[in-house]
Image (tube, protein in one colour):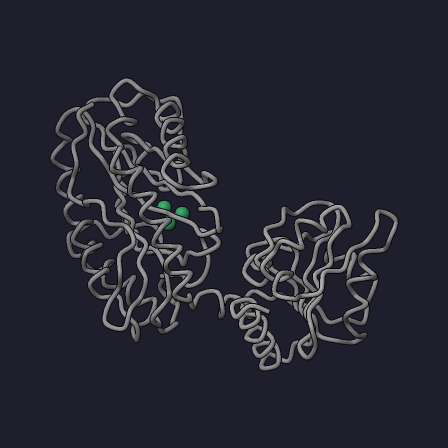
Length: 369
Ligand code: ZN
Ligand code: ZN
Ligand code: ZN
């Protein structure tokens, strides 16, 4: 097998031995893509990587997907692809690779119906989730993965740098979002994963998506956008713009507090500090300025083949950051009924700090409108 696929399989097998897990069942998901390079959509026919801790893996796919599976990095590297016909018992074929009574970890995104089918077919298996097992690998990015995230970051930065074309006074959030979505593809993504355009009071709701509200002169507008590139790595960046006229003074006041908090966090983050300490240093800046109650979410999330994955940058996460971990630093301040702001960059931990993968200016930009 190629170095990549083989080393990931070997590393997960080593983690399985440490965790006393005998087998792993991985259905279409970012986990499957990570371990095999096979980008399969979850459908009613079973597709699964069956990986025993101590022997060779099998990639089980429906016969009609053989060609696709055989183009995956894993198959090209020599992983066995086993196919089944419409009338075969695919669940039994997958379980054939495992032994009765074993401890089997299943990917966190496996459909409940599928898990129950495995359990019914083999009641002696001890099932558990594979989340912790796989996230330990996936959150420690290789240099090739960092390079992919860097390209994704540059692609979303190009969209932000064109924001004056999209976010205009009189245009609805929905119309602006449609233009942004087109640009996300045009600037180097395969899919648009999300587009948040929160204008005026909508900016105060962190996960507001879009609405028919028309953007008004002087509105702060939170624009949080991301997509996936051809090899699956994701982008995610937020900038808060003002459109058409100067914003009210209350907004400007907390925007600079937020900017200071985000900068403090990016300066502080490095290998050797805990995830929660990165959250704390930003929260302190915001609280000391009197806005503590308006920073209503964690600082960030890991990113890779999924937009939200480990490590989570949140109080209570004692994980010590290591070089090669990628995550967002995205504090926000939200005044209910008025407006809000968030500034988000993806960063990668290095030995002496972080590399920011998003580099468009964080200074307050007033778009012409
Ligand atoms: Zn989010
Ligand atoms: Zn975001
Ligand atoms: Zn994010």
